[in-house]
Length: 193
Image (cartoon, rainbow, N blue to C red; front, side, top):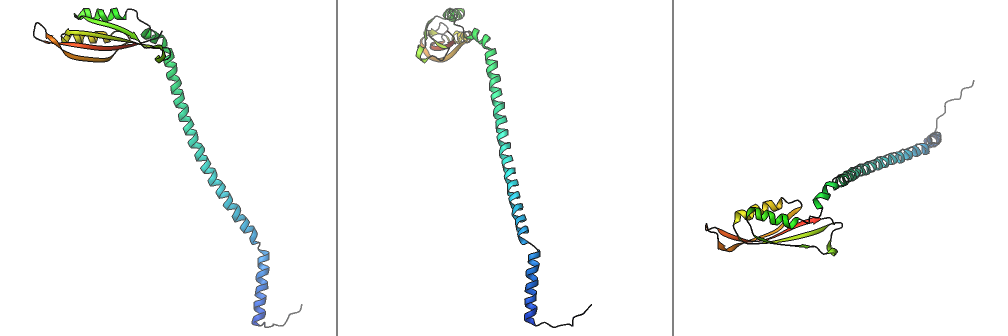
């Protein structure tokens, strides 16, 4: 084995040798693999964040659809309940040919004299499968107590609804000196033909 005598290198030679060593070290350490790995990591993080975002959006859509499904089921249940009670509703909305007689009987029971007229809405404004029957009642010169009792009894007639009432003091007084009243009453009843 031979040994080389120690040699001194000049500063320029040392600098050149250091440059060559550094270039060789760079070639042995491929930087492009590190950069590529970093880029792939950034792409993976962006993709994961996008996935989380899409998962949140999908979760919100799912919750919205679940809420809508619940509302639709509630509406379907209401429709089923209405259809089930349709048989009972048929009784309420069945045309009553005795309606005027019932109103007159309620007035007679409390001692009132009245005039009753009925009209039906014209066919063009009819709600599908229903017609509205209007009842106009005129009462003249009657005391307040029987008038209010009549209104109570008339509102107990099935399907009859008070739509309007106009009370004005009458021209006469009762034998007891009480004020009499004139009443114009509008009542309605929805019927199925």
